[in-house]
Length: 448
Image 1 (cartoon, one colour):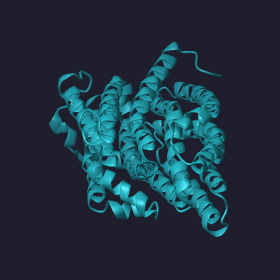
Image 2 (cartoon, rainbow, N blue to C red):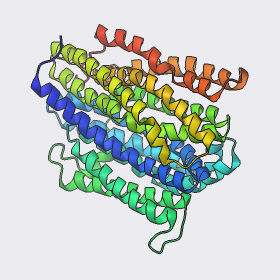
Image 3 (cartoon, helix red, strand yellow):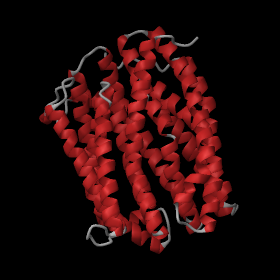
């Protein structure tokens, strides 16, 4: 039985479309650096790619902060209670600022040591250090902006993220063209030019967010002093609900870094090929991740309204939607994989390896679209955030990474086989997701 409520589909697809557009634009900022530097120099592209892996750790952790707060906030939004939303996001802003400052300090003072964890190629590290040392001071602003966007998404104000992301992409693209290649009288700065362009775009995003918060928003009416105000009861609730999602994001980010480190020690073609397919994969799965974020709000709002039957109906319907998204994404990636790689000026070995990696992703992306959205969207949105963390720890750190390390360094298998091991959990987790979601033990009212 599936949902036939027009309001449900309108809300879900409106949220999904807005979040997908926002995420696509944000990815465009990283992809813009990746592709422009790919046309400039393969070594520079590889250096920036490993920095993006470190930054990916920040983004996943901060997303955990924002999503954890949004799980609580969306349930309060179901009851139209805005004061608790302001309180819980006051805690979330403090947490995001702490995470951003920590990685910013590390990235500025010891970038070489951080990047050395992912590859032993000295030339690649040298390019990455130039990029990261300029970019790192902007990490606190990036963290605060991400949580601010999550806050407005939890009350269905999704246009905020779209506008901020559009501004960032436009500014970053224009400045990349000018500063990387040395146009309009500016010197050709290469990697440093890409970093400067990205920093300016992050600053512009943050300034626009503050302006919207102070002068435009009419739903939350949050004052600046509330953004960093912590109350004990909301701190306790945040730690109980959001901390597992923060841990999951941190775990996943570290795991992605370990994956890059494994491939990074299998030669330069593996580094470059992984950089290419990671960027493309993030773009092609943008709808799946947006659907998960939308489901988080939809389910959370329904739980807050106290209608358990509606929550179950929504969960069954959403699973079918996730499956359709996965199949469509797989087909799109299969059709587009050959043409997109032509934009990169890379060696023949790197191009051939990238095609093989993409073929693997064509299979696993269907599993990603279902299990990821079901667990992080439905289960977490319903209030059970701890399960996602436990599930990720078991699969990633207990199965995938040990097998991949054995494949690369003990069995000395090819980069392709190692890559298959690295992505195998995306299919295996589907069985877990089916059982977990349809037992409905994850429905918990967090507003009490």
